[in-house]
Length: 137
Image 1 (cartoon, rainbow, N blue to C red):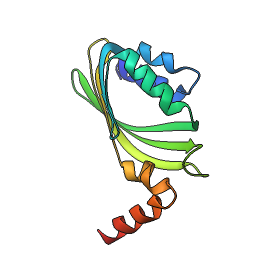
Image 2 (tube, rainbow, N blue to C red; image 1 turned 120 degrees about the vertical axis):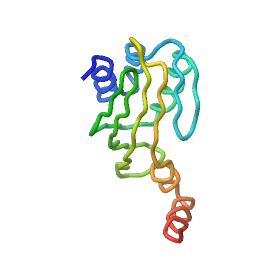
Image 3 (cartoon, one colour; image 1 turned 90 degrees about the horizontal axis):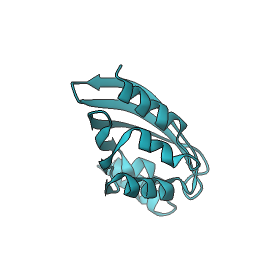
């Protein structure tokens, strides 16, 4: 496995609100980061985004599963177990994947996951409506 992919996994396995700056070891200063909620450009902006995201996170654990790699890109599948103060009393189990493009560092990162499962289904009132709609579809 390539060093940048190993570093990526290591950083995310240890990431919390106290060490957001550790992402600088894997991301290029011009990183483009995309997830179902936001698109962020630049390392400083990404660190700010992560700082806000992790503010109310009690725990966020990743179990990395498969890695599919080509010369300068990879797709990594994972399972995230998220415990958030504002969402559910219980950890939320979210499967997903990350597409990364890299040279020495990652310059493009895109996450794919079910935003409804992670967020909308865990908000009071809205959650029951989203779960109802998903069953109907």
